[in-house]
Structure formats: C-alpha cells, structure tokens
Image (tube, rainbow, N blue to C red; front, side):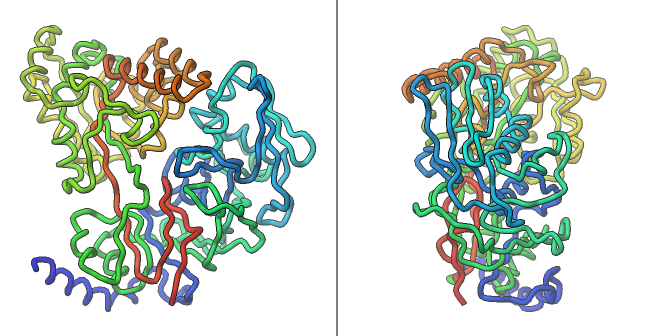
Amino acid sequence: MPVAPNFRRALLAAGALAALLPFAGIQPAGAQEVRAVMHSAIRILDPIITTAHITRNHGYMIYDTLLGMDENYQPQPQMAEWEVSEDGLVYRFTLREGLTWHDGTPVTAADCVASLERWAERDLGGQMLMEHTQSLEAEGDDVIVLTLSEPFTYVAELLAKPSSVPAFMMPARIAATPASEAIEEHVGSGPFRFMVDEFQPGVQAVYEKFEAYVPREEPASWTAGGKVVNVDRVVWVAMPDAQTSMNALMGGEIDFIEQVPLDLLPILETNPELTVSVVNELGGQTMGRMNFLHPPFDDPAIRRAALTALSQEETLAAFIGNPDYYNVCGSFYGCGTPLATEPDPSLIASGDTERARAMLEEAGYDGTPVVLLQPTDVATVSAQPVVAAQSLRAAGFNVDMQPMDWQSVVTRRASQELPANGGWNMFFTNWVVPEIWNPVVNPMLGGAGREDGWFGWPDDAALDDMRREFAAAETDEARLEIATRIQTHALENVIYVPLGEYRSPSAWTSAIGNVLPSPAPVFWNLTKSQ
C-alpha cells in the first residue's frame, strides 16, 4: 500500500513527540480530560465582537443561549421557554429554574436583556430584529418581554441560530461592555467554565465542567436539548503544523482534531484506532465577491459575463480535490437546507468560456483591469483566485492578480478606493452553511450600498425590500417562495458568485465516543473511555 511508509514514519514521529508538545508536563493526563486540536489557536475571547469560528466555538463552551436549534432546523427551548401573543407581536421568554452564572449568582431576565441588546448591535440578523422592535424589557427576575413594532416572524430562528454570532447570554455587568470593545471577564452559564489562569493565547485554552450546570432533559440535537458533560476537562491545544497534530493523534497524545487536511486523510483512514467523520454535515460554501463601486463590475452585464466564465467544478477540484468532500451547488442557501432550490442552470457559475466571451463583447468591455486579490498564506482561500484568474482571462478579461497575505486581503477589501489606488475588483471567501441558510442571516445578501453594506457594497433597495418581506412571512411556503425570488434576483444581478460546497472531516481516537453532529463543534454529549 502506498500509504504504509508514511504511516510508519508517522508512528515513529509520534513516539518522540511528547517532549515537544506545548502542554506536556503541564497537565496530568486523565481519563476524563479531552485534548483537542482545533482549526485555529484562539486569541479573541469575545464571541459577540467577532465572527471568527474559533471564538464562536469558545462561546459554546462557556455560554448558553435562550433557544437552541435542533437537527430539523427548528428552534427549541434552551435557557427559556417562550410563547407568542395571538397577534404575533409580543414574545415572552421565561427562564427555567436554577440557572446560575459560573460565579454562583443567579441568571436574571435583566442579564438576558442586556445580552440581547449587545448581540443585536453586532449581528446582521439581530440588527434587523431590532429595526422591528418596539421594546425589550425584563419583567421581574425570570421573564423577558420582546414587543415588536411590526410583524417579524423570524424571532425564534434568530435567537436560536447556531452561527455566525449566536445570541450568547452573559451577566449584565459584562454585557454592558460597549459592543465596539472586547469583554474582559469571561463568565457564562454554559456547560463548561473557562479557566482564565491556564489560558495561554495562541498555545492552549482550558475548560472545566461546570458542576452546577443542569442540562435540559431532552436528547441533545445540534445546539438544542440536554448539554450533558461527561468529561472533567477539555484542553484546546494549538498545533499549527498538520503533520505534528496528526502524529500526536496517532500517538495518543491528543484525542481529537477538528479539521484534517484532505491530503493527509488516507494515513488516518488506514488506522483502525481512529474515527474519521464529518461533524458539520452542512459544510461550507466558497464564493467570489465583486466590487460594485468601480468598473468593470459596476456594470451588471459584465458581472454576468464573469459569473458565466467561472466554474464551480474547477474551483472545487482545485480547492478541495477529493470529490467525496465537495459538491456543485447553485443554491445561495446551501443545498439540503429548507430554503434550497436549484436556480436556472444558465445563471450559475458554469465555466462556459465561449458564452462568457460573447456576453463580454456584447457588454462593450473596454479592457479595464480586474484587480483580483490573491491570499497566499491561507489554504482555504488560496486556490480560488488562481482558478478564477485563468477562467476570466480565457473569457477575455484583463486580470491583474495581486498576491498578498490574508490579513492584507482583509484590510484591503475594506477600501472603497479605485482599484488603481489601493482598492480592488474581486476577492474570495468562505462561510459555513448555517451562516448563509436564509436571507436574514446571510451577510452577503444585503443591498445597503456604500454606507452600510458588506464589502463590495451593492446598492439594491429591491433586494432589501424582499428580505423584509421574508422576515414578515408567516408560513414556510411563503418564506420559500420569497427566498427563491431573492436567489433569482441575486443571481441575475450577481450579488455574489456561489462556487460550491465542501465539508471538512474531523478525526478522533477510539477512546472518544458519542461525538455530536452539529453545525459547530461541541464537547457535551461525548464520552471518553480509558
């Protein structure tokens, strides 16, 4: 077998690895301690101030939410039960008994009001909810009353959404921190406590079971149901080198790897002591975003020519490689989700070079350079611009691809200057499907323009009107119809270019069991044997 030599080398390397591990000798290995290598080291600890997934994952360890989302995409009670008035304008959330913060003080309705207000300042869906809110108040210690000023039927779904910024609850004194500033105290009411004294930014983060946490009685399902913790501690260990983390897993020094590089997957799959599986079955979507402010992509006809020139299949093959872990998908909301519909094939990225060339000629393209930003240091966004540049050039575009590191891309994409003066025309990014699965939460489906829009800044009032219509719809059928109209409109105007879906496998040792499928990795429910 061609993988055997690599496998033997990996085992030998693992035997000598313990002395190199950053946590070796610091914490005693115990049967109830799970050591995990996440997709990134964690440095930012405020899960409201950033959309970084590693910080969201940290949020699920130590914070709880009023509502959770189950595997059927349905909001369920978590910290609170809720009821809605007959006219649909008043929501009353009643906290369940016995909820306490990690410092021992009781969770109150006032804490949750302050938490919701801070969350809504940062979250796109929360902002839309507050636009429809007349008042948000605590009624006594246990009841939160949300009164709407006009119909908005997506309240429960927003409070239960699992990503990108879940509505985590915090004590009022912490939630009083301005939403533009990071919190400095890390006290939640969730199933784990954050061990501040053991936190080493970029090295390790440690969580201990919160003994006073009382889980719900329902079975765990995504972020809903009973969050039963079966281990004493979870330690997140930073290991930037994939080969090192893989050796550590096979050597038993760690228990879990959140994301396994696909090119190393065959080595792990041959090891009977390991499980390789996709925890987030919804996966992610990769996409391209054009700049609506400047030529040539201020012209919708030229945007449509570019859309036609790009190819989902070619992009995914270069980005992911293994067809077991990607699929072509024309839906803006992720295939397999309740709002997914397949658009007109002529509107998706088909890689039809000849048709794109004809469309470009008909649009009167004058050869204006397309400044395409290419990050060179992040594997998950490095391949897409290379493939896109080739496709666009073949169709007749004058592409000026500019390599830089990802942080430079992140900085430059915020510039509204002309491309020749430090601006840009196109960049690529990824979102997990729970961040795009409906028009209210999808951050790229806004039409707020230069002042309030997301990078690229489409000015599209019709798009925003349809999003408001979606938020007021009262039936699933009506929501699906509106979402489909939004998708057609977005494709015809090329609000962004969906380039297909992918899934990232995780791996864990045979000592670990009951890993819960979820849109975000969670550490309740799982067990560890010794």
